[in-house]
Image (cartoon, rainbow, N blue to C red; front, side, top):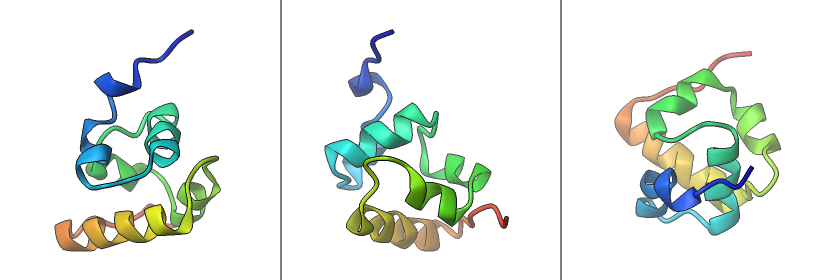
Length: 72
């Protein structure tokens, strides 16, 4: 199955995430910042392609939007 990442990663590209990080989020069916409520920080960090700078940027955006990770 081929995924059309351009159809799903718009929000991630808009906030400046790298290509591998965008693909990792789409592969995990996480399409918007609000979707991150469904996972823990550890799960985000464990996604293949998710680097430290992308995690830091995501946390910055989540803090600004008052969105919290799932507590595991």
